[in-house]
Length: 90
Image (tube, rainbow, N blue to C red; front, side, top):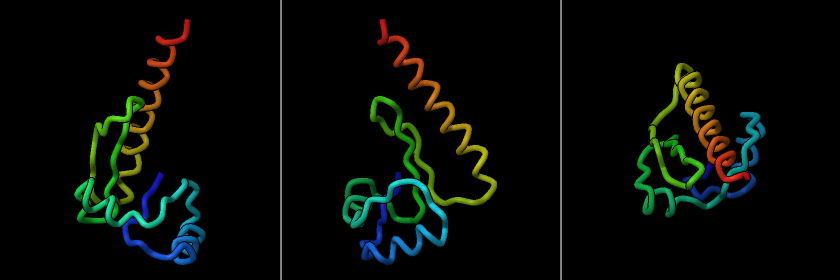
């Protein structure tokens, strides 16, 4: 999920989504939330949230070389969530 931290109109964000072929949902009008609640000062800023809703990692910026690290982090969080679900299922 992404948050647009610039409070841009929906049409502007939609053009960006189409141009970049993004697939994730994007929340609009997130400037005050991003800046005031999460102290975001640069874009992109990524927050990694586990299955318990806790922020477990934060990173600022992105380069192509980050993709593999991000993919591994996502896989780890998904595995942890699956294990937690298995423990709760009788």
